[in-house]
Length: 430
Image (cartoon, rainbow, N blue to C red; front, side, top):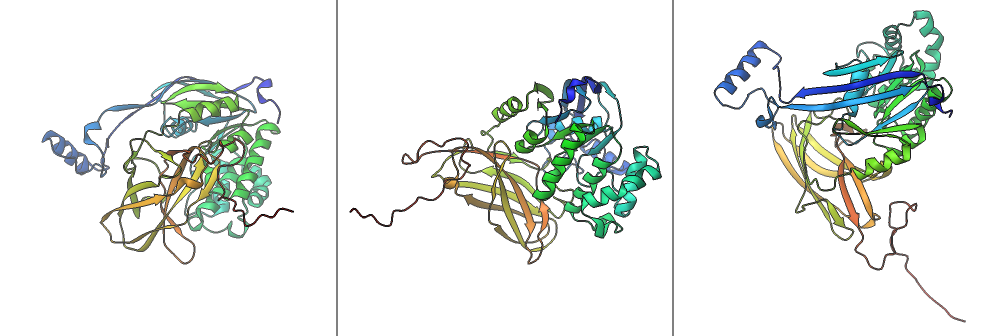
């Protein structure tokens, strides 16, 4: 890949960018709901229109999602944007994509932006895949003839040719990702903005997308902004990286150094996670079933000896009846590289309107020393393809320490798993 900054042609210039949000629900959606909320606050009562679990003491307080961003991105650069949840990454990309407006600051964009911030962004569910391709081209200012010249490449890359004339509301989340990425990568735009979307696609397609983004930046001279928690993809794609923390850039430069700084911000002291106000990794997640809280039991920090069972409690609410609900943990090392997926945990049947607390345990004895995190994935128990019910976009961090004195110090570069002991079955001397 060429050094994109050699041309030193600014494509994105950001000065003093700030974004302030007011916590709590500002509008109830109707005049009646707003009057109900106002009358409840006047009487010192709980707001009947607040989301369940919202802390009313926070109502009306402000939160700086971005607190003074200064950044210049050059033509052909592949810029990685990393940071913990809540650091401001997605807010930054939404402002660049003109989805939301900044509170303060100035942004100069030298070119058109093709953004893919979540599965299905910019798609009309009632339209077919082909119709959505033309619509996205029109949004970017392309003529029908220009889209015609690229549509065969888009369809071939998306691997959705068999379903291209089917309404996209019938697409799986994986098909959404494939078509949306193909559209963003092939239509004429000077800037591509990607926010953790490849996590939904299969591994083969992820590698295909990363290769395409490398070509887009290195050979086509377009600029790529890429947000991910998977540091291996950041390493593979990006030529430069920034680290966001509490709405500010705390590092801008070399990719490896940025990753090291990001990993140092990992917090293993959090043992109680409130999930009522966090985003979900899948658009439909949290509607039929909602995970409200996760906590590590009997711990002041989530640090475990490798002979110590990890006990976790989740609180979840069913909004409709289920014959069976399963859960699994998607386990990652702290740099985002995948470690493995646990066997499904049976959470049992559920009745609508009821809240359940489930305690489960995980044995970390096979993990090497180090810091890890997992994503929680709750899905409907089914004999055929499982359906995602909830998947909070939160990394649940923990650390494993070695308490086995017979085990040598864990060397770097040898993976993350302890194999079971090798047993000697016999010995002979001649």
